[in-house]
Each structure stands twice: as C-alpha cells, then as structure tokens.
Amino acid sequence: MSHFIQLHLLTSYPPSNLNRDDLGRPKTAFMGGARRLRVSSQSLKRNWRTSTLFEEAIDGHKGTRTKRLGKLVFDRMSAGAGDKIAGASAEKIAEVFGKLRKVEKGKKHEYEIEQLVHVGPEELTALKALADKLSAEKREPTDDELKDLLARRPTAVDVALFGRMLAAAPSYNVEAACQVAHAITVHAAEVEDDYFTAVDDLNTGDEDRGAAHIGEAGFAAGLFYLYLCIDRDLLVENLQGNADLADRAIAALVESAVKVSPKGKQNSFGSRAHASYLLAEKGDQQPRSLSASFLQPVNGEGQAIKAISKLERQAQAFDDAYGAGADSRFVLSAEPDYEKPALKGDVHTGDLQDLLTFLKGDD
Image (cartoon, rainbow, N blue to C red; front, side, top):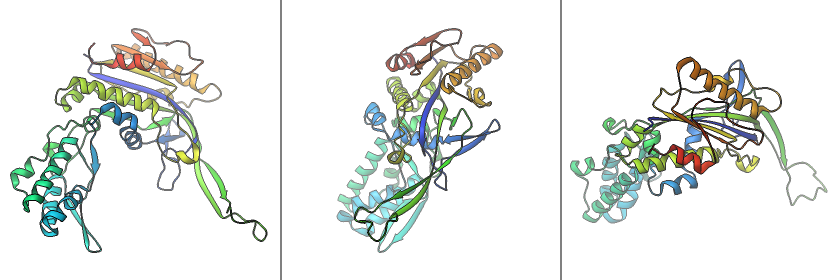
C-alpha cells in the first residue's frame, strides 16, 4: 500500500481577487526573480473543508473550528440552571479546550477561548450532552466529566487531514496528515486596479450627474501551481484505523481541490474554475514539490501547455537524478491541446472517477 500521495495541480483563474492581503489586494510572493500571485494554504483548506461537495462526501465526519464552545454551553444551560451555574460550567468546560478569555459585552459574558480549536463531531456531541445534563441537574461538571470531553483521535476527516493544536491539552494534538503549499502563478504577474462607480437609481440626473459611489479594488489573473502531499498511513492512524473513511477523505479532498475555488470577491469577478491539469503520484518515496519547474517564469502564448511540459520534465529530471519519485502516476487533463504524458514508467490517464479509483488504498 502506498505511503504517500502527491498532487500537482495547474488551475487558471481569470481576473479575480481570490485571497486578499491586509490592504484588500491579491496576495503575492517573490519567486525566481519575479513577482507571483499567491493563494494561501489557509484560504484553500478553509474553502475546501466548508464546501458542500466536501461535506456531502464525508457525510457527518466533519469537525468544527470555533472559539465559542463556552458560549455554546452557557446558552444551553442558562435557562435551566441559571446564569451563575451556567457561567461556572461554561468556564470549566471551555478551559478543557483552551485558555479562557472572558469578554464582557454589556451585561452578558461571552465565554470565549483565546485560540480557535478544531473539535470532532463526537466531541461536540459530548459537550452538548454534558451541558444538557448539568442544566437538568443544576450543577457544575466534575473533573471526570471534563476528562471525557476530548477524544485522542476524533473521527473528523478535516482534523485528521489538517491537524489540530490544543495548548491546554497537548496530548490531544493531532498531527496533520496532509500538507498544502501556497498556490503560486507559474508566471510573473502584476496586480491591477479596478476603478468603479455606482449610480443612484433614483437620481434623475437633472441636478447631479455624479456617481453615488466611487471605489477601487485590486485584481489579477494567473495560472496557478498547487502542491499537496498526503501521508496515507498517518491519515488512517488519525481516523482510528478506518481505511475506508481515509479513502473517502482523500476522494473528498481531491475532488474539492480540482473543483472548488476560493470565495474571495466571487460576486465581483465570477472567477470560479476547475483545474486544467493534475498529476497524481503514489508510492513510498520521499515526497518533493515540483515548484522548481517554475523558477523561470513561463512566458508568452500557450502558457498552459508550456507549464505542463515544464512540470513533467522536472518530475522526470528528479527521477533521472534520484530514482523514481513514485511507484505509479496518474494524469488528469482538461487542456484541449495536451496529447499525452511525457513521463516514463507506470503512468495512467483518465477522468476524475478513474483518478479517485487510482488513489484508493487497495493497491
């Protein structure tokens, strides 16, 4: 069974603002002597795990990231047990997951954890059940009840894939089974400015023909390279040995990666896109990105075909230098001018369903 799965994607986005910096402009990075557009891995993972496609594929095995577990407890308990018991219980339960930051808003207390925590569905269910029990019995939780709230390895697929850190209970940390690189353009790119105006529908223009609003927004277009690496053995371990759920997790992640676009400014730019090309690799070999393919920016016309050629040539160059980088490979292409892989060895081609079958762990 293959230990590692590596994915290399090329996705073209039209003018857009997929992932904004602190000034509201598209994020960038400097690489190979040229400025590139960038989409952060945090943005990508957030959009994948919250997509309808991902949630439906994993069917109930999705975690929740929040600071508001204490508030959830307080709201469930206050009516039945009163604010005093509810507040004390909310504090104790919230502190199981992280350091408490009690923020006073008017006359209400928000029992908020300082750091976002990622909890599995069974942990959230246990927390709600305990809150309801304490409310009915009008009491605070015992130490044993608090210990039972955490699962060492929750069955949440997104926790298993992307990990979690619990500063208050480090023994319940989960090491991420999937690493996601920041997506970067294969070519140099410049952020442009969109100067726009809005007109008041009720302004007849008889006295004032000026715009009701004037604004400016940054945007850019590009062909992005994205690299993912999945440690399948660790994923199965994180999911308590459930290999079938691990396969479903991989399938959900891969389909989301090729189909789900970042949501940044989608209503303004309509920049949804599917990947034009994907190279999947599986084997026990030490993983490596193929980002070196694009140290020299891809220029001129036919960028997609040139980028595919550079990527496959780099993969083959690594193979020639260090030995095969994977036991087998799969190429999924939606690029009309692409003919066939330029890679040696065991290389498969087909559609998305063929790819998902290729990635299953029963090889």
